[in-house]
Length: 184
Image (cartoon, rainbow, N blue to C red; front, side):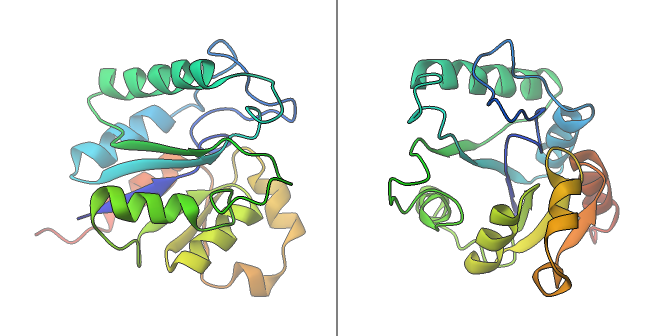
């Protein structure tokens, strides 16, 4: 199985320090929907792994989150692709759960759901937590400069960046991955 794991806020959609709290605030980053559709059309199983502590903070509820994910999925489907799963952590940073990135709970859920290992799977994110969970899970960490990506690059050291590919956007990552694929 060809799998790609994506963080949501800052990778697929615009991010906000005030949280994305509604369908109206969920705005795709230019090219991201088309990138997911291209990956999906090329045979990749595309899944999303996202921390959504806004639920624990009572900024929005699971129904509103489901509506955001429905909008995201519908846009990808309209572009000819598919998101095969959305895995989210609803807990706050102090809740001590295993699913909040950089914990491995979401990764374990993905492995169980699809009956596969994520070893070597591209994990695309925009924060140090995304890079860390990717490395802990044995994924191939990819950092995009959208969302908090530029700030993340400025914050982390060269050791933490070791083995991390950096792209301007999800679209640039997808274009590169599909361009460098060996035909089967």
